[in-house]
Image (cartoon, rainbow, N blue to C red; front, side, top):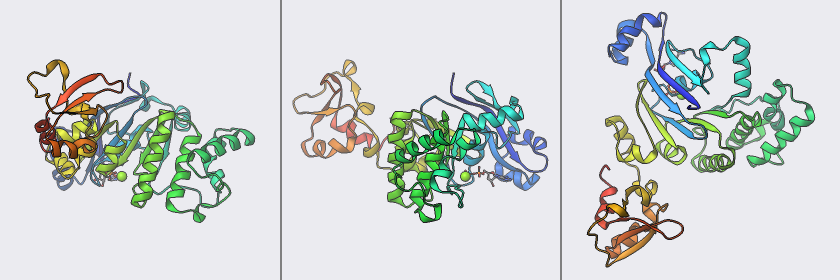
Length: 342
Ligand SMILES: Nc1ncnc2c1ncn2[C@@H]1O[C@H](COP(=O)(O)OP(=O)(O)O)[C@@H](O)[C@H]1O
Ligand SMILES: [Mg+2]
């Protein structure tokens, strides 16, 4: 069972959303529907599965439906039609009380604009969710200090948000989300308001934390580099439609349409593609010239050995950590992988 499953979700904004559904299903475009009915298509027949312990990135241009999608997961928004299952439970069937519990214990959210209480200190902000859960002062303090340390803010626990930089405020937001120890974290453009260097630090911090925590994270961004760095899988939205889901390499090597291609056209493939992705497995290789071989590790990114291959015209022998031969990449295949599809 997937951690989160979304089946054929439609969301239409306007005075009578259900009346517009048939038009959407018949394939009218978002613009057409707005023009003819005054309704806005938020999501158009979106289905996806998100697995436990992965970072699933949802990417798309502004207005493509990313926030609308993530808000369905904790039922801040109800679908016009369709099903949202979290750990197999249909969130639409939750009673008011169950829904409150579900939001408190199952999912936490990190927002773009931090969403901190200005009149509460760092530790009070971090402990807010725990306070609501009725956790004792002493226990709360222990958990909060632990999370404050985890995000690198030790020593700042008694400061107020306006005494902190944007990056530090977002660390507070992250610590607060971690404090309630929910399995699922929803992050809506959480790093988008930060300066590039700080943003890159935060991405690294999230990846480091995730190594130990193994949470299910749904991360929204409009930034391709961020998607590629963070995502185990990436889902791409365009005008409310999910146009492609895949691993970062799938998206780069085989963009599903023009919209995705436009996103990935300037990406430096050598930074993202590992040797094992483009090698031909050793069983399938015949007739490769082994007179001039360069040994590369299967998990090395192309950019790490590309210069050497270009200079020496070598073919690559791909090995695992123990030195076992896994496959080969000819220097032509290597150069082609930088420009062509798989
Ligand atoms: N509450 C709302 N009322 C009307 N239209 C909305 C509402 N929320 C979002 N929309 C529309 O739905 C579409 C998707 O918006 P959103 O999910 O916020 O996009 P994103 O997060 O990708 O920028 C946009 O066209 C937006 O204008
Ligand atoms: Mg948004």
